[in-house]
Length: 334
Image (cartoon, rainbow, N blue to C red):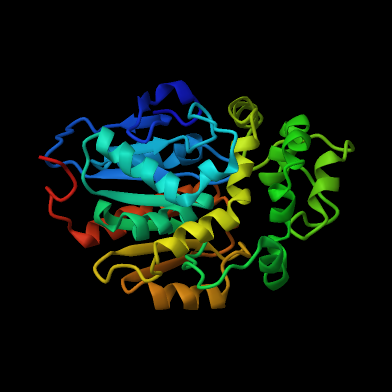
C-alpha cells in the first residue's frame, strides 16, 4: 500500500443488489478474521475518488482494521448514470448499504469527507442499523430541512457556497471537462487566483481563463494531478451531486426523515480552522443534533484535511476508536 502507487492497493469490482456496479479498494490486515475484524468504510467527496484516502488506508489496516474505499457513483471505475436524480443521497446510501451486504459486513465504522461527509451523515439517518461509529471530516452535519430551500436561496444565506450554482448549471460539465487539469488544479490549490472562486459568478471565468496552467502544490504532486485527471475525465456524475437539491428534499420529506442522530451513535467531527465551511453556528447545529459528538479542530488546516494533516487525521481517528472499545463481534455477519 504505497500512496504514490495506486496499483499497490487491492482493487475490486462488484455488481451490487441496487443494480449499480462499484469499484472499491478492499484492504485487509494480515490477521484478518471476518468474525473479529472491524471494518472502516471511507467515502470521498468532490472532486475526489478513492485515492483521496491514500494516506489513511495503510495505517488503519496496520492497526488491524479492514478498510473499504469505494469510488462513489459517477467517479473513477464506478457506474456513471446520466440522470442527476440517480445521485440522490437516498440512492447513494442504498448503494453503501448494498456494498456492506456484498462484503458480508453488518455494521461498520463509516467515515466521510466533503460530499462524503454529507452522504455519511444521511447514511446515519437512512440506515442507522449499519453503523458502529461515524467520522465526519470538513463539512459539518446539516439536518433535513422542514421546508424546501433552493440552492439560490442557500447561497443568499451562505455566500461562500456561490460556486455551487456553477456546478448545478448543466453547462458547467463540458466547460470543466475541457479545462480539467486547470479545474482540478484550482480545487487543490495548484493555480494562483486573483479572486476567490467560492463566490457566485467567479468560478466560470476562473475555470475558462487560459493565463496559467496548474503547477505543483503541497496538496497534490504533478503525478497525483495526472492520476486525478485520468480518473475524472467524465465530470457529469460528480457535478450531478450538486443538481439533486430538490430530489433530496422530496425524498427526505416523503420519508419524514428525522434529523437527530441515534443517542448511542458515537460521532467524531474533525475540521480545519482555515476551512470556512465550519462556522460557530454550524457547530451549534451539530451539537444539538448529535448526542454523542466529539469535535476536533486542527489549527491552520484547510479543506483537504486528509492530505494537509494526514498524520493528525489518522491518529485522531485511531485514538478515538480505541477509546470506544467495541465488541469485537459487533461488525460482522456471523
